[in-house]
Structure formats: structure tokens, C-alpha cells
Length: 149
Image 1 (cartoon, rainbow, N blue to C red):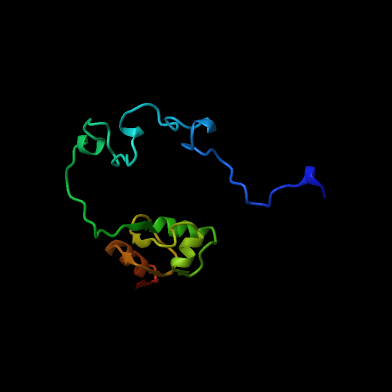
Image 2 (cartoon, one colour):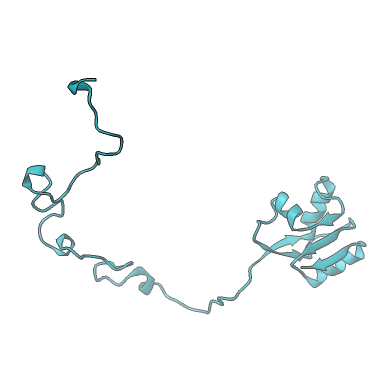
């Protein structure tokens, strides 16, 4: 080891430009902020959505109606979709959340509702969050069982 191959310890030298540390650094003077104006001052911060005094987009767009913050969104699955899965051999006799997620009909945190569109010939034991009246009747008419979570 000699003087020509000495190097500083790992992480001891900071990389990056040191702005506003005098004229000699080449980054002094206006410190990359330009001349005068609001943005050149210390303490400047722009409000979110501020458009320079122009009426902001969220205030220009018309608003109407009512949004219920307690609304529950259900992922609807029709009986004909379940019948097609039975025909392809992906479902045998029980249908629950895990099976529906595995077949990509729903996601992990979805609330699921079985809808009555289509025809169900297979006898299925279905366990989900909700059923329509027509779906419930069709499942029980095919000899299946309905369980609400």
C-alpha cells in the first residue's frame, strides 16, 4: 500500500451536487432557482391542485348525485359461468371462495354474489356472501345447497 492507491472508506464520500455553497462551487448565486419570483424564495410550497389562479379542474367539473360511502360492491357471478366450469371439470360438487379465487372469478377481498342468468344443471353446494332469488331457486331446483356467509 502506498499513497497513490489509497481510497476513502466505502460510504464516507457523499455523491451529488452541493447546491448553494458559495460561488466557488459553481452552484452558488441563485442556487439553481433562477431570478426572483415566488419559487426562488425559501418556504415556498404550492397547494395541491393549484393552477396559478385559474379555476382548478376539480372545481370546474360539474358535480351531481350522491355517493354512499358505506356502499358494498359485490362481484357478480352468473349460473351459466358456474355451469361452464362444471362442464370443463374445474368444479366438482362444492363452490366456495377459495375455488372461485383459484379459477379467477373473484379476488381475495371481493364480496361475491351469485346471479341467476343462465341455466344450472349440476348439483352444487355453493357458499358465498349473497344470492339473487332466481339464482337461489335455480340452485335448489338442481338439487344443490345454498349457504350464505
